[in-house]
Length: 55
Image 1 (cartoon, rainbow, N blue to C red):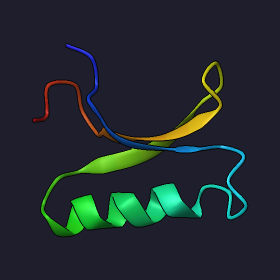
Image 2: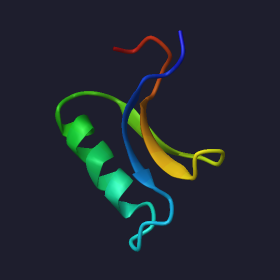
Image 3: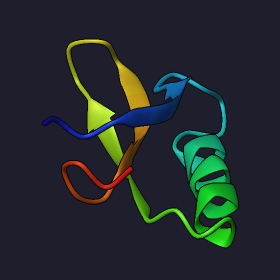
Image 4: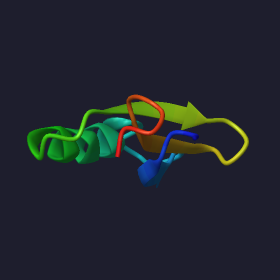
C-alpha cells in the first residue's frame, strides 16, 4: 500500500510550506504520525502518513 495523502497545499503559497506544517501538527496532536513532502509534478506540499499502511 502507498502512503495516504491527508492534506495538501500549493507550493506557491505565499507562506511556503508553513501551512502544510501547521496541518501536519494538527494530525500529530490527534495521534496520527505524518510528514510533509513536496510533490514536484503537482507543485504541492502533501501531508502524508509516515509509514505505508499506517492508517
